[in-house]
Each structure stands twice: as structure tokens, then as C-alpha cells.
Length: 375
Image (cartoon, rainbow, N blue to C red; front, side):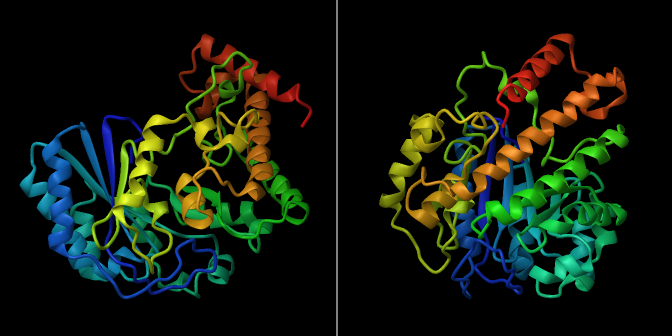
């Protein structure tokens, strides 16, 4: 998926069904409803005929998308054969438990323009704790062989935070890249969980300092130049919701992104959604989320407007329990980059590969600004 305004990310909700009940899942009210081929191709046809973008990413979503594999396959092949002049790629995120041999064969044959991203939360004990004892049903070797450069989705919850680093390493031992992220809309306790998170971040930072040939995962790969004191206020809508992102539920109603479809049991009137699109196009990030204005973390923070709206009824109503955890990530990332730079072996670190002198100066300026805050 790309964030460039020349790429259109179209989230296609295939089904509200899922064969698992993961403890931290933000989607509520799962049910038996699925989309129809006619509904999906109708809105995709409209998207493609407008020809406003250079690239199209069809992101099949659920529930568990592979419950509707035949529909997903048919829609993907329709896109490729009906619009050969367009650059259309497909992707999905899956729990990996539904794939049979015929599905794997199709995926393997189409892996250059279809990516299946695996959700895997760590080793057996950690993964099974929140994901219905599904670890042993996942063919991890299949994912590592088909998409070796695609990181798996590793969700970290309060009851697995203490083994974050070890679980990262275990996932990597399967030949998989990994990008851990904190679960959203769960009960994070700053007093209880934040010290543990900081300890695990220290381990992650040390790992990348000791393994310069590896690109740091997104949890600590936050560029310090974002925090230069002289930086202009960013628009702060990195996700592209409502701009180059759009999502359609199983009935074909359009939403700014898939996180706006968090309550699967209800269907919204399109008229009530129009103001959301208008605000996302017309307002700055600090207007959408006034609470965030003036926060030092603002340039790198990505408030989820969809979950804010679907869970609290307002795109600016952030989950403030997450704020301290975002700041901890920024500080850890700045320390990591500072120590890389101080080694004097800048060219030895993949994270600093091809960094120009001007970019290096900006990074140092941002690090100094963060450290001066004494947070």
C-alpha cells in the first residue's frame, strides 16, 4: 500500500465473518453478512473509470477475508483482466488458518501482484493467548517463501507486552520480517504497562545497534528530523483517510477508511458520512484533533480518525491512553539514531544508508530538540 496521493487504496470489505475471536480485535458485532460480486464490481468500476490515480491497491478486508476466497479471487482476476492498462495490485491481511493447498497455489502463482500479510503475534504461547490457539494452524513457511520482504502484523496487547522483544525475535526465527504495533482500543495502563514497554523498547534499540545490517522495524524507525524546532506544522494525516483511501462495507457504502467500519452490526446512512469526507479533505490535522495541537509528538503521531469516530463518535476524540506510549517510541527512536551517529560508522547502518549531509544535519537537530525537552 502506498500513501502517495497518486495511489488509491481501496478497502473492500468482503465479509463480516471470522473464524477467530481475537481478544483485542477492534471490530465488534461480527455477523454472517458478506459482500456480493455485483456490489463490489459496481463500485470498483466507478473507481477505475475515473482514472484519477496512477496506482490502485485493492485491500481485501474482513472479518477473515479467506472465508470468502472464491469471491476475493474472482474480483482480483476481474480487476486484472478488465483493466490491463491500470496498475492494479491486491493485498489482504489474514490470520492464516483458512488457507488450503489450492488457495496457496493461486497465491503463489499471483504473488507478484497479490500480497497476503500474515497476522502473527509471536511464539506459540504469546500468539495463542489472544488468538484462539491458532498458532499451529498457520503455515509460516508458506508466507516466508512467497513474500520474504513483507513484514507480518504482530499486535502487542497489555497481556503480551512483557515479551515483546522475545516475540519479535521468535517471529524472525521463522524467516519472517516483523513490524510490531500496539493494540488499539484496549485498556492500556500507563502506570503498569509503560515501564514494561520502555524496557522492551530498550531491547529493540540494542538489537538494531548490534545488527547494523537490518532495517529497524516501524516501532522505532521514526525519523528524528521530524522534530526539528524549525519544522512547519505538518498536515498530520499520514494515513490518507478520505483522500487517497476509501473503504466499502459489505453493502457497498463508502467510508473514509476501513477503521470507520468498526461496528459491523450497523450500517450508516451515506448522508451522515459526507461531512467526514469533507472534513478530512478540507481540515488540517490540528483542526480535526485539537487535543493534539502543541504536542511535541504531533509530527510523528498518527491519530486514527476512523477509530475515534467509530468508538467515540468524533474524529478528534483520541484515545489519550496511547499518548505516553507514542512518546516513548519517539524517544527510543531518537536515542537509537543518536547512538548510530555517534559511532562514526554511519555508512555501516542500513537505517542511515544513502543519508545526505543535509539530512544528517536535520536528524541531529531533531535529536537535540527532543533531548532538550527532558521528557
